Image 1 (cartoon, rainbow, N blue to C red):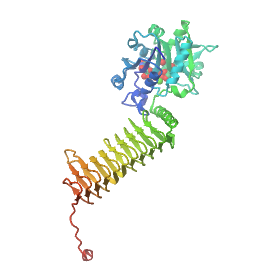
Image 2 (tube, helix red, strand yellow; image 1 turned 60 degrees about the horizontal axis):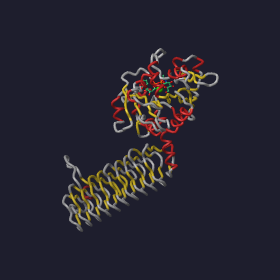
Image 3 (cartoon, rainbow, N blue to C red; image 1 turned 90 degrees about the vertical axis):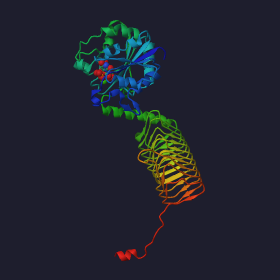
Image 4 (cartoon, helix red, strand yellow; image 1 turned 90 degrees about the horizontal axis):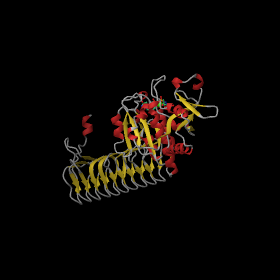
Length: 457
Ligand code: UD1
Ligand code: CA
């Protein structure tokens, strides 16, 4: 849409969240609550968008510091929604098109709905169009009062409404389209003569009607979309709906979700077709997962790039790692940041890696810690191997060449290098570099004291 700007109200504190963090910065499906309406406005063609900030203004501003199309206007005191919009005037000086007015706490609002609202508003040459919804329980919302022929007359707040008006089930969503000229010519004539002594933006409805301008109500098909989040129970409900939308999109793109009601996949995560994700997985951050992967139950993945045909087994935790193709991990493995696993690597149960690179075909199948390690291809890391990377002050690197076999229960005291094709015998503590093609063994020779048990008794 051309010539549309948006104003998003976000100055309120959100008292009912009972939080140190301002309401609109609480996360919902992997991003801040306010990012959702910001993106919906952007996708509907709005530019610029003005955020009206007040409580924790710097934090809200900071969250959009990188976005060139977002401006912020400060509302120092929260004197009402009308006053809040008036604060955006400076930032929209010279703008003469349609202004979308949204709230920062309606994360479920979709761009398509805004586009429909703008189109309806423009087709009817309206000065003001309000998005409404019909609710079974309209308590707390402003009610839309219409005349006998259905024309919108005014909006009355719950606290100012008569019993007859309170019986109206059509409510004000708090989302509007207004012509900039009408809006800024009239916003200063709003008074605070009402039950809450606030400047109500909704008064613009009766002002438009009084001037004989077209003032319309457009009823949303899906009342869920305009749901405002006031407390943590509503936040959880909104996040659940957002996740279901994300999950539906993934399924439409060829991803199998064993139980989409129990898949926690954040906004922005990419998953390729023919990948299957079992229940109770948490997938977040800058993560992409290739095609044909299996992610078993209870896996948590954050900021990872995972190639095709990988198998992540139950209970594994992956962060900041890069997996190439056909890698197997887990069950119950922990890949920490800086892990890079090339094709066909196998990481088994109770293995932890950190800043560890493993070449193609290498394996660490059981019970191992690999930190600050550079491991070549076709290396076998035996059960119980530990890279002793920390001397209490500094971290040191372990380098293991191609084709090395590390036996069980080996400690590699870094910095140390094991040359290609060498074998380190089980139980060895490696403190010296091992040349290529060698056997390294450090064991106290075994002594058998025959009859010892009998003498003890
Ligand atoms: C408002 C509407 C009501 C509508 C409801 C929908 C008015 C007078 N009433 O009521 O008709 O049904 O939204 O949710 O507009 N805000 C500011 N600065 C202020 C006041 C509010 O930025 O001075 C922001 C809040 O942070 C919030 C939004 O505006 O994001 C709505 O404010 P709120 O006080 O929740 O309005 P309601 O009383 O719910
Ligand atoms: Ca509200």
